[in-house]
Length: 209
Image 1 (cartoon, rainbow, N blue to C red):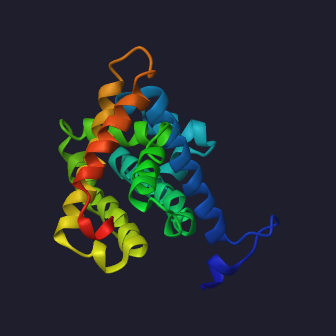
Image 2 (image 1 turned 90 degrees about the horizontal axis):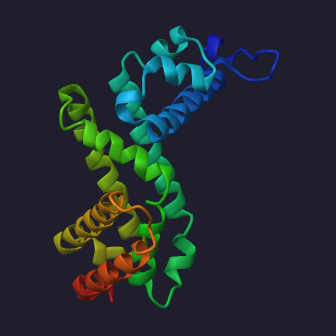
């Protein structure tokens, strides 16, 4: 650790720790803005104000809006991974690991985390700079799903068949949630998920069941 990053302030934190905390505030504020205002309404000025930092500090950490929102996607992916891996012990002793894993995949896509992620995917269609960055992040998200599968199912998950199954399950969850935005309420969403889950069960590789 350098002299600068190792020096502690009056609050007892190093410069490195304060910088990490500021980044965290900016990323959380970005997620909040994406959910509340959508991608078009998420400006760097608005994010800085919500995070309680100066515009200069925001630019120092994330020079452009694309840099900021893409970092937020990685932040979201990390959160979802933490939620999933925290359930590893429970799933490893489950009598229905495939069904419970599908339900976990469904659960961790609920709420603002998914909404913010979709804002970026949809905006990337007409924003080449954002598209390039999102295209770099999406494989990382898919890889986290595969890592989870390998830890839970062992060698059975280290196959092309499992990768295709995992990607199909992800596409199904995302598609259901996006299409549900067209309805005034989500009373039918759970029933639609149970129907889709039943189909996904029949598609599961035999080595997992």
